[in-house]
Each structure stands twice: as structure tokens, then as C-alpha cells.
Length: 346
Image: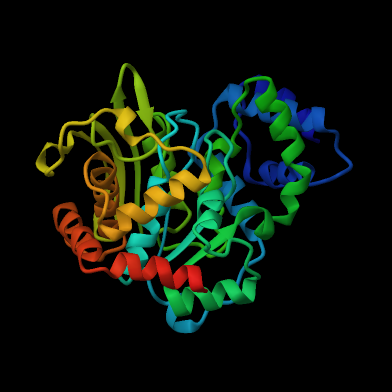
């Protein structure tokens, strides 16, 4: 079946819903060779994945995930995820992870779904581990952490056991320089099915497509962003050093795409090199310095701008300008540092 679908994709034919389910079943089977799976992923990428295909793959894979049973009060609240797809090759410090902790300090339930580093020196799991925050919680402890602390990290491999039979094909594609649909899927597979999401992507043309996927998956409030950093480079975050490409939607507003410069925010002059990070230990120290208010300048500005978006998407403020001010207050009041300490203590 997978080989037949591969040939169909090479002819430019889009996959139907039942074909996608068959493809997912084949991808997670240990009886199908790595080469056949990689050929399918390569053909799908070559055709170009549609919104419907990405959404159906995400839905099918998410339904196979291990899902923590949440307290009813948490389940009926806004649950936010903040993450980037990676792949921008800018080696910045862990902006999204810093923002996630800050947003939880502001009273938002944050369920961050992530992994270890793939295209950078320090992924979300790596830096959280260096900060002393548990990254290998059982489903029961994960649900309790979200209830008690307003924050939980869901380590992707623990919650998607079926992926062990997909990983070799992804690695083979990567070794051949071939991106796959899984470059899109990571942020869409959070087993807690967040109601609000801020996602960063490495190319501006992905924003609209992934935004529509989020909307079709039932996310109530979503924003997909990409930032320019000069010299033809892009960032899978909102950029403080160049134009930003944004696709967003909210329950009471239509789907909207825009491009804007961050000139309306009090951002100092900077370049992408000012946002550079290091290994997990170095980045953990940067996170501590930012959240404690001891580090100002470009790295703080980057966190504040992205936190403004996260807090706005979560419905915690009426505008990004208000979100910037709220993020500043959370840091200056000591709430962000206290939240970091609380999370590290478990």
C-alpha cells in the first residue's frame, strides 16, 4: 500500500483521508522497511503537503499518543503551547522555553511539548533538564504538575511510543538532506491538545499553511510566526531585528495574515548574533538571568516580544502591547524567577 501511495504522490495526486490513515498505519509498522517509508515521505514532500494532509496526519498520530488525564478545572481552562519547529539554523538561545515559563508565571496553564536538540545545541528538553525541571514525567505526574504549577513539559518520545518505528525513516531522509512532513508535525502533536498555540516556523511561506492546519485541528486561538534576521535569514520566533510574518486566528476574528516590523515596541538596536545561545548549561544560565531581571538588552527584548504574543494568544491580555507590559511586570515583580524556582523544586 505504501509503495502504491508513493507512486501516486509522484504523479501529483493528493492523499484522501483513508489513504492517510493507511499510510500512518504503515509508517508505525515494524514490518515495512525504512527505505520504503523514506521513499513515501520524500514523495509526499516532493508533491507538497496540503493543509488537509498535514491536519489528517497530525490528527491520526495525536490520537495514538499517551494522554494524561487532566483535572477538570485544568481541562476546561485555556491550555497554551509555545514552540518552534526548529530548522532555522540560527543557534539562538531557548527563547520559546523561556517564554513558556514566563507565561506560566503569569497564570496561564502551559503544556510544552518538545524534544531534545536536533538542529541546535540545546533543545527544550535539554535546557529544562539543565534548569533542574523534570522532563520525564509519567502521565499522572504530568497532569499533577500542570495543576499544581501551571506548567508541564511533555517529552515527545514518552508520549508517542509509535514513533520508534518512524524515526529511522526520518533519519534516512535527513541524511539525504530531505525534509519531511514531520518538520511540520512536531508542534501539532501535543497529546494534551492545547486550545491556544504560538508556533514559530523557519520560512515565511509556511505561516499561512500551518495556521490553517491549527485551525482545522480545533485550536481556538493560534498564531504562527516567522521573523526575518537579515542577509536572507529567518528565525522560528518573532524577530526583534527584522520584519515578522504572522498568520493568526481567534474565536471572534477571521483568519488573518500580515507582515509587520516591531517598531512599535521599545526594542533597542540589535542583530541576530545578539540572540546567540550555547549548550544546555549556557542557555540555562541565560534563562535564569532573563527571568530574574538581571539580563537586559537584546535577549530580554526577544523574550518580551514573544511573550507578548504568547500572552495575547492565551487571552491573558487585549493586545501585544499589553502583553509586553505584562511580561515586564511578571519579571520585575519576581514572579518569573519564583516560578522557575518552584518548577525546579518539583
